[in-house]
Length: 214
Ligand code: GAR
Image (cartoon, rainbow, N blue to C red; front, side):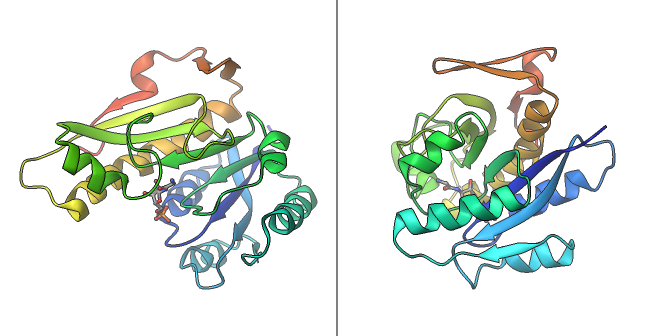
């Protein structure tokens, strides 16, 4: 069976990229990463792509439309069918978002719609929430918004600082992103308005509770 071709956009560390690379090592996983694009030449994730033998491109931060045009061409050349934003910290222009509607996912380290944008873990702590987590969603023009595909919940412990909470959430991200990509690759996701319907798997499979056990 042909595997779904995924292009991953990164800006930094690339640990979610690594989780997707690791998942795709299993020949039974229904998706493969065929291209990594970074908007920063110094992104550590580029070395992860190289280590896995995946082609990568650096498309530097220029004017927004120019980035979108270059990224679109590169994604087309690699026959990418799904774009996965993995720590991609740049706002994409509306035309690019529209072109990839329901074929572009993002992962964010909060239980959206709470705490979109920067420093979600710090803001979760400041708000005194007792659980937090991460969300994979289809991308819409507003930052960290769009139909929610899957979420994972982790506890917030009284002694947590930002780093401790971020690490606990990140471990959950590494479970959740490969799961969401798999559900899409298996053709199980359909979008109606703001709601993603997941067919053929029971809710615990896409609403994970403390999957990393932290
Ligand atoms: C992850 O925690 C991801 O959820 C977050 O950036 C980090 C990237 O880590 N993304 C956002 O905040 C998007 N708004 P990684 O480079 O190690 O995958």
